[in-house]
Length: 142
Image (cartoon, rainbow, N blue to C red; front, side):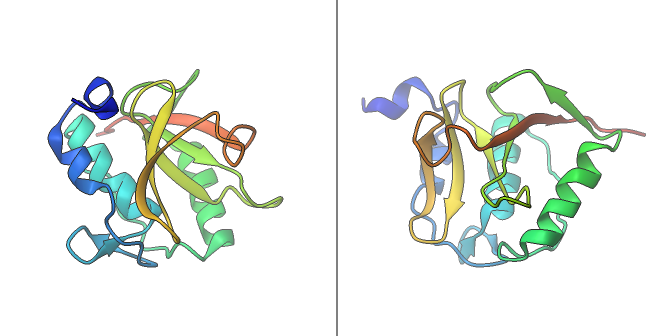
C-alpha cells in the first residue's frame, strides 16, 4: 500500500488525482477547476453536495467576493485548523482570496491546479504554507 493508504477514506478520492484542470470545470469526466474539485471531494468525504457558484477559476475578484460572502453566511462555520473533510481557502493574490481545496487530514489537501490538474499537496509546501485564509465546514440551514 502506498502513502495514500494512510490518508484516504474512500478510493474515489484517489480516482480524482490527475483529472485535468478546466476553467469552470464541474464534470470529473471532462475536467475540474478548484471549486469543481472541492464540490466532488466534499461529496466523497462528507456525503454533502455543496452549491455551485458558477464562477470560473480565473475570475479572482468574483471568487474572493463569493468566499467572503459565504464565510459570513449561516451555511459555513469556521474551524480552528485543518480537519478531515473541511474546506481550506487560500489568499494567493495580494488582494483576493482566490483558491479552495478540501483537507484530507491535518497535513494535506486535495485541489486543482492549472498545470497539474487535481492533486494532493502538503500545507507545508512553500506555495501554501503562509497563504491559508481559513478552514470551513458546510452547515445545512433550513
